[in-house]
Structures are given as C-alpha cells and as structure tokens.
Amino acid sequence: MNRRGFLSAVGAGWLVHTALPGRAPPSGRIVGAAHGAGHLLRGGGAPAPSGPAERADVVIVGGGVSGLSAAWRLAGAGLDLRVLELEPRPGGTSAWGEDGVVPYPWGAHYLAAPNPEARATLRLLEEMGVVTGWDAAGRPVFDPRRLCHAPGERLFYAGAWHAGLTPEGALSGEERDELERFHAREDELTELTGADGRAAFQIPLDRSSRDPELLELDRLSMAAWLDREGYRTPFLRWYVRYAMLDDFGGELEEISAWAGLHYFAGRKARSPELAGSRYLVWPEGNGRLVKALLERAAPRVSLGALVTSVRPRPGGRVEVSYVDVARGEARRVEARAAILAAPAFIVRRIFAGGAARGLPERVASAWLVANLHVQRPVDPDHAWDSVLHGADGLGYVDARHQLTDLSAATSQRSRLSTPTQRTVLTYYRAFGGPDVAGTRAALLGAPWEALADGVLRDLAPAHPHLRDDVDRMDLMIWGHAMPRPRPGFLGARPFEPLCALDERVAWAHVDQPGMALFEEAHACGVRAAETVAAAAGIALGESWL
Image 1 (tube, one colour):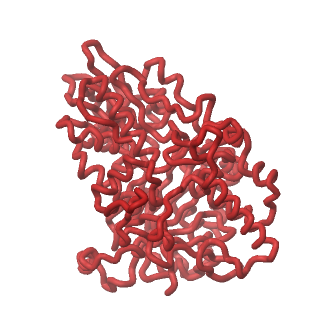
Image 2 (image 1 turned 60 degrees about the vertical axis):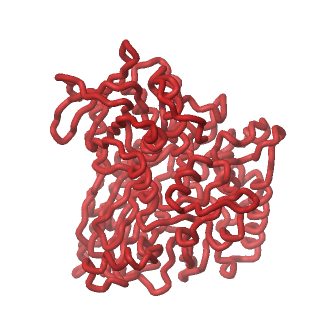
Image 3 (image 1 turned 120 degrees about the vertical axis):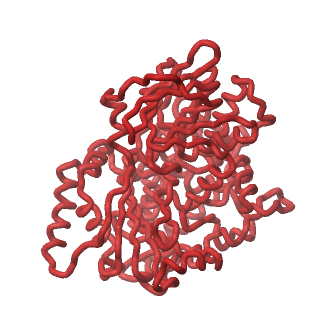
C-alpha cells in the first residue's frame, strides 16, 4: 500500500468511528521511537563537538540486545563501559513499559527454548536461574515457572475461538491433509543434515549446513517454495504467512525460502518438559532479558545520545562523537575500543572506515505495536497469545497471563481497584509488503487517532465491545524494526559475518546474520566484545560462543 492509500484507509476508519455517538476512543499517545532525532544523521544537521573529551575503556553505540550483550561479556574485566543509546529507554525492540498494572513489552515478547548450541544465551539464562541444570543428554532443564502456562495460544477462526493455531475440527479434509503433510515435512527438515554433516537449519545460524543444495533454497521466495511443493489450500498458506510476518515482518513473496524453512526447522530443543510449551515468557517479554543484561553488566548508559561519528585515532584510541539530544550539546568520548551495535545503514553513516562499505544491504520491516490498558479481561477464556485469522495484525498477548508470582501480584495491589482483572494487551502488526519506504513514511505521518482506531477495528470481529473496556492505548512505531531476510539474504559467503571494522572497532547487530532472533543478537554482541578485547589487550579468557 502506498502512502496515500494507507492514510485514506485509516482516515476513513477514523471518520466512521467519530460519526458514532458515545464511541469516543481511549486516551493515548505515540511514544516513539526517536525518528526525528535519528533523521539528523540523514540530513547532516548534527553540530560538531567541542570541549574536552570524555573517557571510557569501551564505548558501545546502541543499547539494544547486541550492545548490552557486548557489555555483559566485557563486564568481568573491570572496565569502564559506556553505552550511548538514542532512544529514551534501553532494549531496542526488546524494550518494555512499567507504567501499567503489570509490566508489558514494546517489542519481542518471548524466547523459544534455545538449542544447546546457543551457548552464550544459555549461559545468561543459567545466571538468571531460568536454566536450572542439565539432563543426561546434555540438554538444558528450564524452570517450569518461566515456560508459558496453558492456555498458550488460541485462534479466532470462522467466528469462534479454537485452542492452538490450527483448528483442525473447523477445516476441510483437504486442508487437514495438507496441514498434516506440511508438519511431516517440518519434522523431516528439523532432523535433516547436509552433505557436510551439519544440521540443515541451526541456531546460531553459523552452525547451519553449507550444503549447496540446501543453500539453493535462498534463491527462492517462501511463496515460490510452497508453489513448488504443491501447498495451495487457503488455511495452510495463511498459517505460513502468519509465521513469516511474525518472525520476519514480511509477506510470503518477500521472504527467502531458506529463512522460512529455518523458522519451522531451526529449533532443536526437545525434552519431555517442553512438550507442553517451548516458550520462555515474562510479563514484560524480552525486557526481562534486557534487565538481566543491564544488572550484570552495569554499564554507564546515556539515553537520548545520537552518535554522529566513530573514528580510530593514533595511539590506539577511538573517538566517538555524539549529540545529547535533550540539551542539544555535541560531545565526544575517547576510548580504547568501540562496538557499533547499530543497523548496517547507520554504521555506514557514522564510521568512515573502508570496511563499512562491505556491510550487507538489508531491508528493514516496519511494525506497529499497541499497548491496550483494559479494565477487565476481554473474555474469561483468554490465552497468553490470541490470533485472529484474516486480520491485518498478528493478534495480541496478555501481559498478566504469566504473572503467577504472589509477591509480584501483591506489590501491584495498591495500584489496582480490582487487582485480579485489569491487564495490558500488547497488539502487533507487521507491514510486510514490498514498498517498505512508502509504508514507513505513511506510518510516521499517521495521527494517533487513526492508528488507534485501526487497532480496535482489527480486533473487533473477536471483541466487538473492546473499545468500551480500554482506558488507554499507547502506540510504538518501529520504522526499522528488523532485517527482512529476502531471497539472497545469505549472500555470497553465507554464515561468515563481518565483525571487525578496524583493529579496535567491531560491529554487532542482527543485520549480520539477517534474522532478528534473540540468540543471534546476543551472539553478535558477545562476538564483537571478544573481537575488540583481543585487539585492545583486554583479557576475557576462552570464548563464550
């Protein structure tokens, strides 16, 4: 959809809504992200720094998962770590809010149980007490309180709610047969190994097979692969489309078949305890993981800091220039090393070194996230994750669903008139079409009223009275939420990410692998920390990867 079409559509919905008496929308606002400040880089209007330089051992540009993971890896070396983050909150797309009756996510809201190969992530989870031990087969054992409680998922299909995402009793025989055939293929691919003996699809991605026959899948779109394999029933196509939008923010035609099949076959964590659920969830989503990184790394974090340049200097130093957006002051920091935990298109603008020209070209999907503060549960049988078949969005999660710790519930009680009823519902919509720039501009130009009304209308088939139960709805527009793994995203040298940009400057971002998984972001940060540490003479011991 182009900008004019998008604004016309949401504007029409808003006009219909305001024409109905007694149907006033809830209060709310658009809370971010900091697009205006970030666009100073594009326009070249940032001032030059003056005055004496600040000092640090390592400067980390970006306070998302990759940047904070780098700080976590360096924390034990007794360093002065400085994190410069543009947004008013840390965490990137794993940010969270705490001004509701329960904490709630602003982005990523779960972590699938990691594969044993994701060593760094499992190490963090072990520190958090989420991994409580290891079984005889060498598999991690997870705290059952952190695994998603039942009911986990439900689907609104043909006018009724169904447990899970596949309402087999409501499907035709042809649709059930095709779904069964797809799941059988999914199991085959999960166990498949390439000619080199590696798993066909693995997490971390760089543990995946280099078999040319498997890599050929990256030349196809997921839509083309489904066509080739004869998957044509409407429900199966919807099911796979939902998965591609959910993990990658792209339509079937926009996603590499290799990436799409990795979604279904890359998760290997299998144990009896995961039979009921393989999702690790918290009320604030992956914000809980960000909190853990911040607590363990304890870096100096400067929010509202727009980095404008990173330059290696003589004598083994790196100079990082930035603007304190709130004060309008330009400053600089000198450090022994720098880690650029930012998207490739940002790094190309702030780092003048020739290595930056070799960074991959990525297209970033735009997302809309809405947090609806509701007076009472929208229905008595609500699950953690609720999906509406045929809707524009991906559904919503209930922040209260996992809040079973009595002490946590008690601490909230003074803020609630009816502590067992009020909650926060987090709604997600990915804009997965090919006109990424046009959609992004349309989102940034749309008023809160139009976007909020669009959310309520999208949920109305399942919840016609939701508008009356919402006290407040805040919105987050993620213009560059995640890299979209289009066909060819693996590149000419698959699974060989560029990390070192200079002797003391490293890059850490999910643009490296091209897929925005927590384990990948975490590994990127750890890898960058270990790379600059070696160059700067910082002793870290053996690798955590």
